[in-house]
Amino acid sequence: MFIHIGDDNVIQSKDVVAIIDHSLVSSSSIIEEMIFNQRKNRQVVETEDNQAKSIVITEGFIYFSPLSVFTLKKRANMKTTLNKLEDFSEETEG
Image 1 (cartoon, one colour):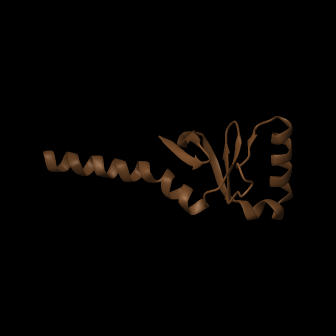
Image 2 (cartoon, one colour):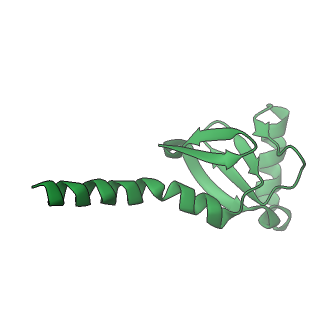
Image 3 (cartoon, helix red, strand yellow):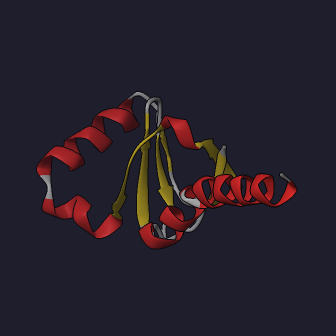
């Protein structure tokens, strides 16, 4: 399944390692160092207007997203909701 994370970026949900609040970056030297190193490797996708609310970490890239962690979590959980709808429809057909 795919997740639209804002700024015309769409990623596969299976590639997501973590989604963290942008405000946590300055409180963790480990996260700051990881982002710095990924920027050197050109593996960071910034938001268009530098108004990131969350950071999505995948296996290959780090994305700064203008969407909140809560919104991204809801979008990631849509697969679970859709699977439940499919299960429900099978029960009513049988």
